[in-house]
Image (cartoon, rainbow over all chains, first blue to last red; front, side, top):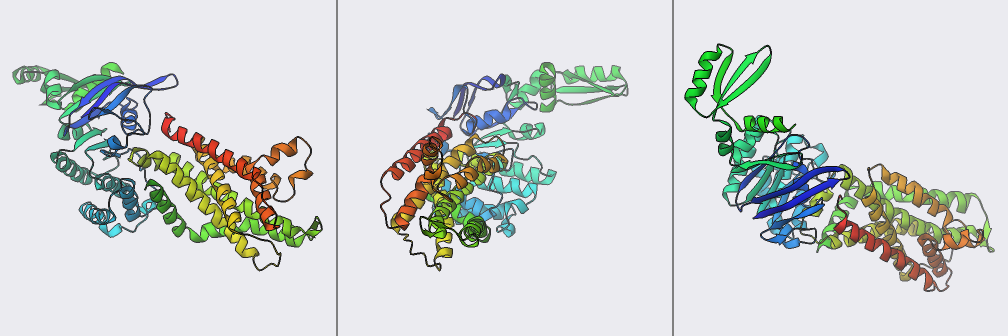
Length: 277
Length: 243
């Protein structure tokens, strides 16, 4: 279980994360959503101890997480937004370095590396230097590296950024699989449909503060499960309804420039972020 | 264990860039030896100037090799590649990471100094280099590796590393007992320069080379620098809020 208690991070006068309280259960697939600059990456950076909180604390299974907490850090693996790898190492060296940092036996590192690179379709590039890989390949390598150590908690900061649609879907399958093995996953993403497809619960944060916290379906239900988009003078206005009949009645009165559809998590995000921005 | 991991990483880097590292370690010291030691034929204390110069160049090469191996590399890893994030999140104790970097940097410095010893070996100078000389080179390399670590933690951009070299390494190279004795400097300035680590490392290696005792003061000075910068780098890596 991960607990964020009163977590705050300030950079000078700017408050990036503002007294954030969250509890993420073991085995949960948890999404952190918010507009650019909302504090998602800062939160993940504090959870990986790259940044230290200005106030508050993070607990992993009841124990405080800091840079000395090797036992807690052993449970964690992180995939950062940027390609945080030695650019001059090849794939095998990147994987071996990771394995050594987590004190895995050499045999295990070799076998698991082959298995993961094969699974990710990277095996034939195993001796290629990171700087000569495409963005998608680097991203896959980062995932292989994170999974090498079989973490209990996986922190994912925009893991599918820069991936094509097919690779993204493959990634979703992979993440669902590892989550089904009881791995706790904390995901930040700009692709809201990704969070809707994968997450058990999502937190919407804005300006470092928690705005909403619930299951995607519950947030959608709260806004209204049905949406009618009205287009007029190049402007799009969406209205939300709890009742399908009410939505259809509105649609009938609205004319041809309106369309009925199911509300998505992206609607919740837009409404929530739009109100606050 | 974490120390071995960092040394392994340094070995991977060394093996890959062997020729670049070797040539870079050779060029400047070799130029100084050729120009000042052989081209301009002078004497110092009745001895050929080369006898004075070689121990200083060995100490200088050790300093430059260690400092550049860490300052450049760590700045790029921390600020550009973000590869240091992988270390921060790993369970490897961070003090072991620091110690591994210091030893790795120092070994690179010893390699640079060793190249100079090899290159000057055919010159008949009668200078002595023994295990104690190697230990001083190791200690000197450790001092400059820890300095480089601290500066790389302070760097705001990866282009700061060459600036650190300009501000620290270049002045020390020329002022600290490499090309001329600090005793020839004006009073006041002389005492300050004499307390810098390269001055002491050069003086001790030179004393051994001339079959004299290096004394204990130089070891104390280098030890003090190592302790101070070592503590600062450990405090930074554990306590600095925005690393």
